[in-house]
Length: 308
Image 1 (cartoon, helix red, strand yellow):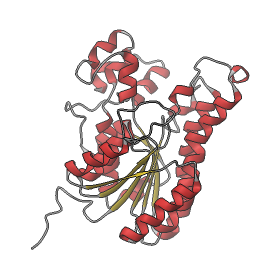
Image 2: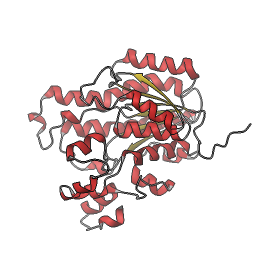
Image 3: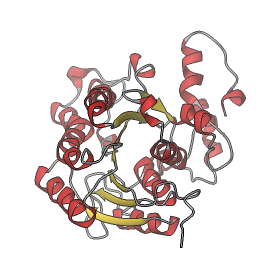
Image 4: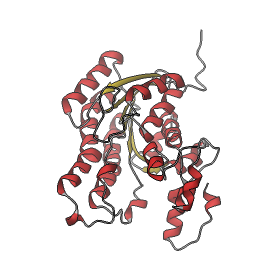
């Protein structure tokens, strides 16, 4: 019996999505599962315990179930990625179960509740700021340090650093000292790891969603995925927002691309990858808010319709 891999190009691949509880991380895990992968979904919120983010309705167990329902194998492993021993135990489990790791997605964050936009660095509580750096940078470093020895055993491994913005878009002011550092750090990590992975046939990239309609963002706007267009009146860029699935499809397309090394070390975004790989968001559109905003910053008056 032969298996048709046309719709499951990642069949037999083992993936770790660190930070898969909700938002982009959950969607990435599910889309990798839809492509046939075995996905370890990790995070701090479980059906028995809620993280500091305080969103009890989104759990890693549910993510794992969605992965399996999509056609992959979802495995939920409660993990605090700031605790090296927990991450080490996670990697040891993956090694025992499969003896390999093909894709590492570093999506750990959970720091939005700490944000103080339009606040000067010296007016931000130091502990809040340092916590953002722990969540957005230190957690990624710990995870890569402990998972990469397993990933590099076979050539072709992929590391995806999920962040907010690209190297180009983040040249501007991100309105919070610590948030800026936390979201630029993964871009630099991808570049450095890309240089180091070259010698073993691996690839590292940073991937950013655009204006993502995560569960948390929809709640902030008082909207649902069905009513999101009502938010355009409050924020015009909301018209170019995207579902988390869009980012999930972007990462799945990268993981399935045998020529993905051409992206090595770069920072990419969902709209850019949609054009390259031909996928769309759930509504059939291809929103590209980062390119739109770059045109705006350059003094142009782009049409929103042309970038959706």
